[in-house]
Every structure is written in structure tokens, then in C-alpha cells.
Amino acid sequence: MSDLIIRPAAEIDLLELGRLWYEKAVLQGADQRFKLLPDGRAQWTAAVRRRLHDLEAAMLVAERDGLIYGYIIGVCQDGPPGFSPEKLCVITDMALDLHRYQGGAGRALVEAVRAWGLARGAGLLVVRSLHRSAVEQAFWRSLGATEWIDEMCLK
Image (cartoon, rainbow, N blue to C red; front, side):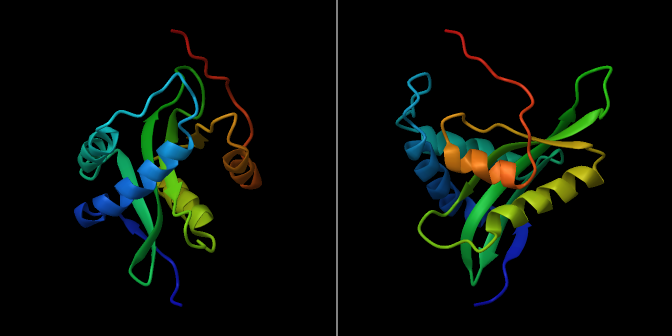
């Protein structure tokens, strides 16, 4: 088995990335505040297609032997005014293939997007993680993440 490669996503990857996104969306779909739309996968694909050319976004994939094991999307944005760091790297999306062993793909993707953000002046890496996703919470904590804010929903 060859080494894992982290590289920028390309147009040709979008079908596979959409599959990974959809699988994650279905598994996390028990929250009644958000409903997966019938054309949700197509909408997601159109949105990330635009990200491919966004200079303030990084779309990276983890690939081994021609197979995509996961992806991550990060964007640089301003931090809270009047505070340091002035710029943040926000992970807006990440998914790993649940059907094959990734062998460190998640950590490699996070480190790559962290390096991308640092190169653009981001002093902090930020990610949203569902309260009820114990596996996801454990992953982020294993990387040293700590809680920052509680995000609330009103209808």
C-alpha cells in the first residue's frame, strides 16, 4: 500500500466527495431542526464546486492508491473584532470514508488545512462538532481541541 497523499480537490473528485458528504449527512440526520433536502447532495456539490476556485478556501482530499479516503474544507475569516488572533481558519466540512480504514487520513487532513491557514495568517483553527456525535467529539479532543462557544438554534 502506498503512502497517503493530501492534495487539493479537483473537479473530478466532486462525485466521490458528494458520496462521502451524503453518507455523513444521512448518519447525522436525526436532528429535527435540519432536514436533508431531496436535492441536498446536488446543492452541496454546486456549493463546493464554487469553493474550488475560492482563494480564501482550501478543499483538500486524502488519497491513497487512487482512492479518496476523505476530504476537508477550510476557510480563512476574520476573528472577533478587537481580539487576537485577528484571523481564523474555520473547518466548515470534513468527512472520511466509513467503509475502509483511513490510517491517519483525518489527522493528516487537519494538519494540512492548519498549515494552509497558518500560511494565510490564521492564528486559530476552529471547527463545529455536533454535541451528540461522540466519535467526532473524541476525534477533535484527541487533537487538543477544547470547547469555545455554544451555538444555539431558535425557530
